[in-house]
Length: 328
Image (cartoon, rainbow, N blue to C red; front, side, top):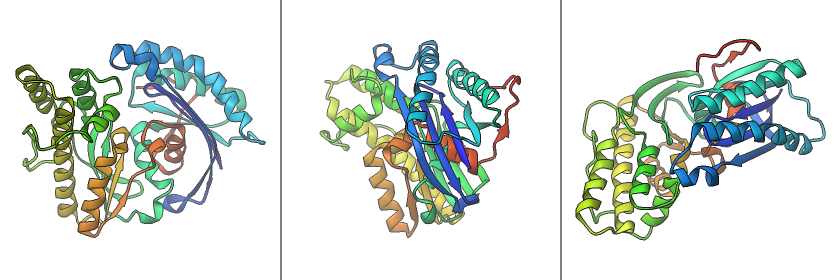
């Protein structure tokens, strides 16, 4: 089975052609071709993603990138097309959906709608499937989401908690703007944090001891704002202390879930999971607790087409009728 996957949920236009062998969690995936176009330079002056600009770039990029995919393989013969249908920025999503619908109709291929977050979760099965044992605790962390999941099987999930306000990646971006760091803020704060003292400033750890598995990062973000208002701006120490506070909460909640549900694995995914400090922290937790640990390699933590192909094969997806109106 060859799957042509299309991802346009935010500010990356991504296509991939992936071949699958086998079924379920034992599936082997072979990446035949992939291409990603970033829009960071376009959105950076605005300090965040501008939806109508993202849509414009997706519509411009998709036909060119499809030809690039074709040029990377001798035999361009997908058996189905998969496209992200949400969650995401609606104008950006529609750019991908409309392109996929037209292409599927032209090539007479089935079209599968994929949940973007399932794509992030299933990206762990690209290279680490043998390491993943159930039950697993999955932490999905990105610019738009902070969700803790209990995964009891390949398609048996339960949401344990999520953010009640800002996603952790959103908090990173907003704090970066306070520090006059460029967009996207996550990598910039990680870089500056290496030069700072994570114990320099005692920022709050919202909800860290609450009995539930929900998160809140707006209070932490506001605490940084007040600190910068009343103190000299030390970018390195603020970055390190903010990052430490955010990661303390993520780690504490995840470990609590591991203990309550007798988990055998911890899975990280999403753009924030690309942070090496966070990866090292969770790897240490997993080692100390005797757990398996999985995190995708860098390029599959951020938005990409390959993860959409993997999710199309492993996840609970649905066919899209060419003239349907999607509820995004």
